[in-house]
Length: 163
Image (cartoon, rainbow, N blue to C red; front, side, top):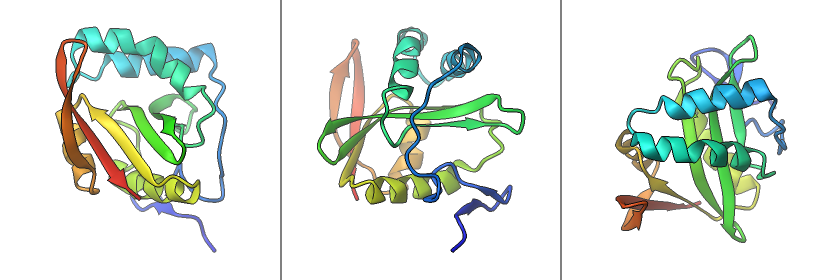
């Protein structure tokens, strides 16, 4: 059986079932690249981005089986997906960022991410929507807006999806 591929690049998806869970240990260079990506997400308030940088790196290295980094052919980080578990079998998509020049299709990766999460035993995924553009994309994959929460003096939508 062949692994899922990104049709735009004919490359394996970062959530190919054959890869299995991967525990990330980031180099100083990768941490710098992740910081630059996080700080460049202009759809999110600048103060929130600055506060998030150390937590993004900590979350990526927390051992969650859903965590991944995207790299270009030269090994430079071009994106990341950072998750944690809130409850047994319920994952929280805490951070997602890209350079927008990942060379990968986000639309190809999302279904593979959802399928991988389900095979890892997750029954529900959730996130707080700081980025309206990303919220809209994830709503296309049946994430539902549940409520608005107050966080850091901001009103932020809370979304979830049952797998």
